[in-house]
Image 1 (cartoon, rainbow, N blue to C red):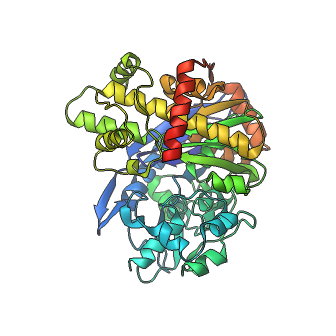
Image 2 (cartoon, rainbow, N blue to C red):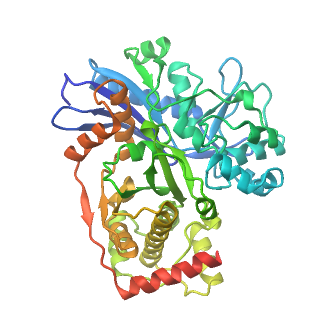
Image 3 (cartoon, rainbow, N blue to C red):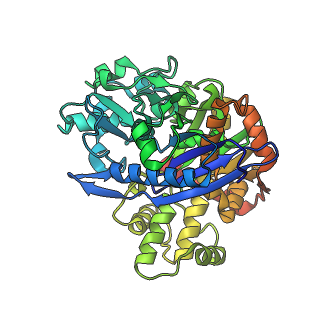
Length: 493
């Protein structure tokens, strides 16, 4: 990397791994370097599936120290993005009271139904415009209260990116895009919605003040800067929900849909304001905050989590299922033999993903699929059909045609899935950059620093300096028949 360019550090925490990335935006290029990567395992502690906050903090510090050694003279700022909904609870002295509970923990079983008995589902959607998922923060908090697991002495609730920013700078505010995933923010006023807290007996006073992406939260704590041999960097809130960063880092063309593809897939389009229509509610679309004041109107899909869970099971019994070997098996497997509804909640965190898939096939009267390549192909083709279904409904709900689908994230490297998506949806597919989340995080920091005047200017720079691939749809009778079969499965689900 060039020594005379301003450098920014993106901490990108995913539900499976994290990384620290150093980035620069020279006039005629783009420089990105992964400084540190680490796993992010969950563990059972105090009776719950939890994230190890101390481990994450230590991993971030290791990455920051490495960034300082790589670019000692020109580091400007650091920002953290993470997945949504999960949170930590602090006491009045700013100490974490317990490790955050993972959204896959079963404590929220039945929490949605219990909440609807106190405030109607339609009323919640009209206030928040958020898709109903059992692990949304609203239901996590309701469950924690109902189970008597709320610890004594809570003074502040911080979502995961805010918790990491608190460690870095001492700030106790909440970044807006992450906050919108909680289903506790009013989509119109862009603030916490008091009616929800009152209806569910939740404590509004522990919620942080909300700030927009690009807000400077302060400087790196002096003690931390000294210990890591760092300057007192500015700590800047990026679009702190990782999908908000991924969309910010997507060089979207007008009229194109976006798909952030990874453990979760999030498919939608940018809109100037939330879409809160009866049709949006009926199809359970979500409205989440985006960079530069934009709205992300989208749907959450279970994503590649299903396939990765199968890979772990196969690997545990000695099967050769590295990505190259599995890709060859997928190509050799028969096409469109069986299909699964990828958002069936049985796939959220089953003891055995393979058993859950087999049960779905049995219950829906489809042939058993057992060979790893055939199972993987079934999952990817089902994801492609789910994407096609959502794209069709996006057009219906917004009344705006889709010119194509732009895929970013780790899943954008899966050529089979990309082509299957084009074929299933009948839309051009464009892919890249795979590192959109880190790029979006860095881009918002660079805008705050004055390197770019706007998100559109930053995206223009990305478009000029990233490699994109295009996939042309190849509609066939087999895909049309599969669309009809998938619609029937969805209607039954």
